[in-house]
Structure formats: structure tokens, C-alpha cells
Image (cartoon, rainbow, N blue to C red; front, side):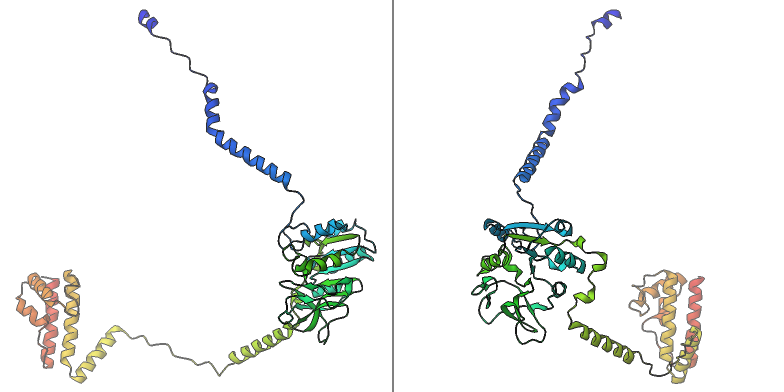
Length: 410
């Protein structure tokens, strides 16, 4: 035993798990590691070459897209105008403007009463340019004009300046959509107007200047995709580059306080309120017309419940009064066929109530009771003769009843 045990070869020591796991793990995860490394390098390269901050807001100097105004901001900077972008009232508080500076305000739909008060206080003697302001924003700056969609002037493309404001005479604006500002009910453009344009409410202008405040209704003339159309670039440079410094203010939503929230009534056009009153009165009249009572409520008796036996007796009386023994016999035979079919367990498709195959029922009854098939057919067959007298009808009913008893108790 000791020799056998000593002659057995000693088992080899197992290799360490870590020795073979390292290369195999690297081979299994090599592709994922390479993909992750490449993604990290791409992100680092994008961050390094991204350049200035970008945004997608329309009329924003940091927006390089079609609706942005980065192109005009850079051209003004190349022309020696210091362009400073200010976002929100907090940044505006640390900005000082002088008499030769220009303050441009975009996203004017975010202007509230408190924001405008701070803007006018910070602007001081600087010139203020409002890009496509609403009627509410313009009134907060002291310019009470109504804004409407501009209508094209005949078949000509764009609008001629027709004024010498900021050396704009002879220039032409060409945009896809614009807003004209006008005095409701006036027969001529408002005072201090350039680029006359008619609206639905009368003659107006795309650019109006009142007491150092400029309303520019053609904001698309400043955008990257339309600044090179017609004389849009020249109009923008002369309007915004008249001073050594341009402060571009971009309002933020959080600048509005809780008390400056715009209500639905302020967003509705003035002409819609009379229409709403007319609709309300029409709806009230319709309710009064359709809801009026035509008289006392009509009472209707409930339907009478009639027992089945009464219905059967009434039908029998009708048959007796009319002397229609054939129909009475048919009703008796039909009821007997229905009951016997269910009693004998026949398929209703073979022996239906209407008698599509009455011979099957007759044969089954004859086999079950021991009667002759002809005798059963004379009672229930399709060619059974109808009774001609009341005595025969009574006898038929008795015979059918007897047949049913025989089927139940053979």
C-alpha cells in the first residue's frame, strides 16, 4: 500500500488566479476602454475649441445661429465700438452708462414694470433701443403706440427710410416679418418715425424715436441670416454704432417679480374684449331660449305587467272567436315539438320548432314510446291534417298531452 501511494505522481500546484486573469481581462475590456478614451478626448477637444459661450436665444449676441445677432455684434466690435453683453438686472447693476452710450434691449416680452424702472434708472442719459417691443413694454418706456404686423408697400421689396434720423435717409430695410408702430385712428405715421409701413389700423412706421427711446420693429434686420439683405447691415451699424460703447441687455425670466406677472387680459388685443362680451350675451340668450319650460311636466303611466297565462288565454279566445282552428292546432303542435325535442335530447338543427326535419322527431318518438310512426306523424308530422271542428281540436290537444306523458314515462 505504501509503494502504491508513493508511486502516484504528486498533483501540480494550480496557477495563481491573478496570473491568468490579467491578460484575459485586458483583452475582454480593451475595446470598451479604447472607446471611453476616445470619447474623453473628443469632449476635451470640443471644450478646448468651443470658444466663447453660445446660446440659442433669438436676437442674442452670443447666438451664432440664424436667429442670433453675433455677426452684427462682432462687426461693431471690429469698428471700434465696445460691445458689452449684460444678462439680467444683477449684472446691469454694476454697469454704468454715459451720455454717448447706447443700451439695446432684446427679448422685450420679459420686461415688467419693475425691470423697466431699473433699466431707465441705469440707462440715465444713454440712448435706449428696444428691439420689437410689445405695446406694453413701449408704454412703460413712455412711448404709447400700438404695434401691428407690417403690410408690404405695393410690389416693392422692403421699406424705404424716408427720414434723416441717424443718417438713415436713402437706406432700405428688407425682412421677412416686422412690426409697425402707429397711433390708433391717426391718418399719418407717428412723430419721429422712419421706414413708413401700413398696418391694419392705419399708417405706421418700423422705427420710431421718442425722447431718446427707439422702437425698432424690424428685429430680423439684426439677425445673422438677414443682416446682409438690402441695407440691413448699414441700418444696424448706424443705429447701434453711433457711440463708443454699446451695452446689450438680455432680460432674464427671474428678473420679473411675483407682482409683475402678465395677466391674460394684458395679452389680449383690445378689439377682442367687445367680441367676448357679445359671445357671452349670445350664450346667455341661447340658455334662456333652450332652457325655458314649455308647461307642466307630463306624467306617463308605467306599462302593465301581464302574466304569460293571461296572454295564452287571450290568444286562445281570439282563435275561438275567429274560428281559426288551424292556427290553434299549429300552436299546440309547435309547443309539443319544442318540449319533446328538449326531452329527448335531439339536436335542434335536426328537429327545429319550425319543422325543417320533423321526420327525425317522429322516428325518435316512435322508437321511444313503441307507437307506430304513422300514428305519431298524424299528430306531429308536417303533413298532419288540421282539425275542422272544436271537438277535433280538443281531441288533438288531449292526444298531444297523452303523447308527452308517454315520452316522459315510457
